[in-house]
Length: 336
Ligand code: NAD
Ligand code: DAU
Image (cartoon, rainbow, N blue to C red; front, side):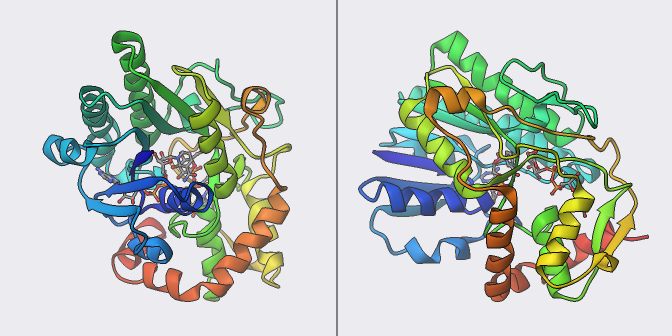
């Protein structure tokens, strides 16, 4: 099988390609990525010489670039997107270009090329927010209620993918997953930001009261979930993938990270809140469990320990990422 992976130089996309070659070494993978600030080919150094791997630099919103990458492809796994909520608040336009227009251009090209499967990677953020201290969880029937430019753009892309299924009978599947964490995550996201800040003797910036809850999914569990959807998922269906069995708020996550690095909570600093900050996410993954036999392999605590260790031993990777352009972003985002 030949897979076209969009956004394969990003956090989840690169973990997915590494996962794929480990589990399906006979397959061919074309990594199509525009190499925005979030794309980093260093994540893939270990497989870059694999004859079954090819990198193509291109923009998913560019029809010609997409059409030429699509030749000979059997399945598309679509990760490419602008992904950081705070960046979508300061500048929504690229989110509409890549996440909405880009997805439509890909769908069109995939349909014209008779691609056998188009798998769209989406987020639980399309469902909006849940109340704190409620037992409610998002599932495949939850109504869409996106509240940030990022989640609104992802919701639009999900609607387009479903429209291609209903209108053209195009073979799609969708996963809506929760917050991923693990190796190679860009340190603008809270877990790698917190770990690397502590390693640099800096504070962990916590928005607002810190009592916001996310559902944490280890990236390798996520990749395995997509693999199972590709092999066992039903065409036209959506699967929610999540990690947590109980709520843990951001303050508790920060304390756990500080503890794993031998620090106490004085490394935590409260900073101004994110506008429109969603209070709580929680994902009910029972459909994926019942129909695909998928569930996370370890607890949040175990995966967090693994993740902290990875950042401790891969300082050269994140130090490079945290220099240059990132410095300007950090100063602007966290100015008093
Ligand atoms: P990321 O920001 O780390 O990487 C995104 C990748 O997409 C980068 O390599 C970037 O260069 C590429 N890209 C961006 N715009 C592009 C364009 N126009 N054309 C081609 N390539 C482009 O993102 P991630 O965290 O790995 O997320 C991957 C996907 O998973 C996204 O669709 C995101 O919405 C979804 N998702 C992420 C999370 C999470 O917690 N990270 C959770 C749920 C869903
Ligand atoms: O839920 C899935 C989503 O998770 C994905 O679709 C997004 O692409 C991904 O970026 C992520 O979105 P979040 O906004 O939840 O992730 P982030 O790491 O930015 O923030 C996680 C929580 O931590 C959130 O409540 C905001 C808070 N936070 C974040 C940052 C960057 C802080 O308190 N301080 C910070 O400095």
